[in-house]
Image (cartoon, rainbow, N blue to C red; front, side):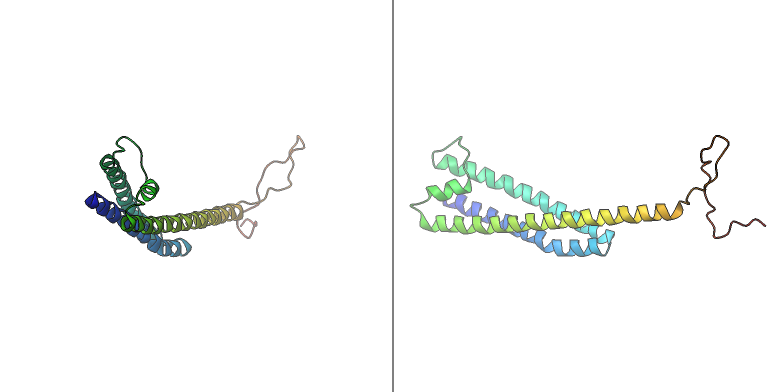
Length: 170
């Protein structure tokens, strides 16, 4: 069981490291969004995807280790968690403390990554709103207003004013 516990702690530390990598990339990501550096943003996104894949593998490994530990402890078939492990290791204070520390670090790192993701999501939303505003502004600048010319049926003809500065014909 000691080797399983050590492997579980290493896996949780690995997850924490991956979340910290995500957190460190977030500053670069914000700068690339603000300064509209799409090539940098694309590179960061591919790095984040690799980290997310790594996190998924580590999470699967953690779940597998918890199943093995449950079998060793005589709780085969039950879905156990790290919190359950902490509660049931009262007679092993060293392992219990290590698990509490690892869980705390992992929870903090995951929470920080989630908070930064929400901030980045809001930043991206604002950037998209600015792009939409710019597109609308450009479209409206290119459209000329309609004239007040009326046809025989007393409705506007829909003619547009000229697009150049002068309407004079030569």
